[in-house]
Length: 357
Image 1: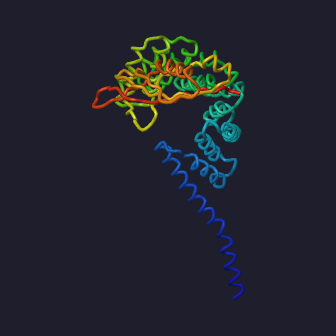
Image 2: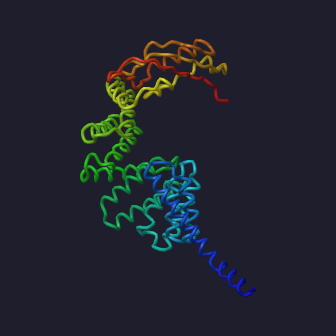
Image 3: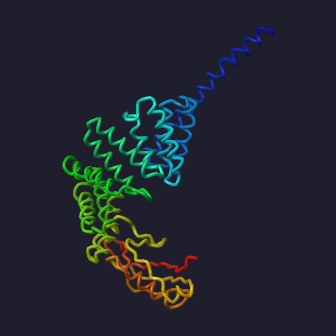
């Protein structure tokens, strides 16, 4: 009897790792499928990606390529404020893939862009991006080279400090030239390039070029695409801002109205201005270190202008009221639409004046 018991116990002990492995594999497969479904639905997949990565380390091993790819998936779901964590995950993946395939292999391409985007060092970002572009060049894939340069331009342009503006601009111009000569106007790449060219132009106060590119985006959506898209809304919004910058208020009106047709007016919340001018701090109040606030109600006209401003409540005196009204008079809104027509509507805003100490 003792022998039978020992034999049975040994069999169970020997089978336990296999059963545990099956359980982990099953849990990993279910988690990974749920992660893919969340990505497809554009839902937050961060926790699922993290869990898949953690389980993947047990299923595949910590130095496996599948684990490296799971690390990239997880890093891509993390928000921008998790910059250091994102960098460490991309570096972990890159080290595995580069060791197995080489530093200029196709396999490290995605991790290089992740590293460039998440590093705090502009110099390192440039080095990573150069490697990624070289990988595309080695493949002799002209479209991939253009795509790589567009991504590189975007990353370098928005680095907080030490960014290589002229390198980014050169990358963008090369990518843009390829797109304009080789791919359809309504392609995602053309639209992305138009936005970035417009951003560079606005940075240099070349407002007309920025307007030209964003107008192209709007035209593409109007003529070639049969659906509304966030990119179209963004283009209209930026055009309002740019036309106001150059003093073409009536041109801005067309885009205020276009946005109003796409986004319903919500009486239940404070309306966001499409273009705003910050109020000047009254000099006498600043000298005295005085703070204040002004609550105003006003009419948004069918053209998106601000009219009939009334001060509802204020603290600190008339100087604050004067500057608050002077600023809000220059704001632009998307008007309210009813039954297919733009109509006047009431909105409200509070402006706070505070001295930073």
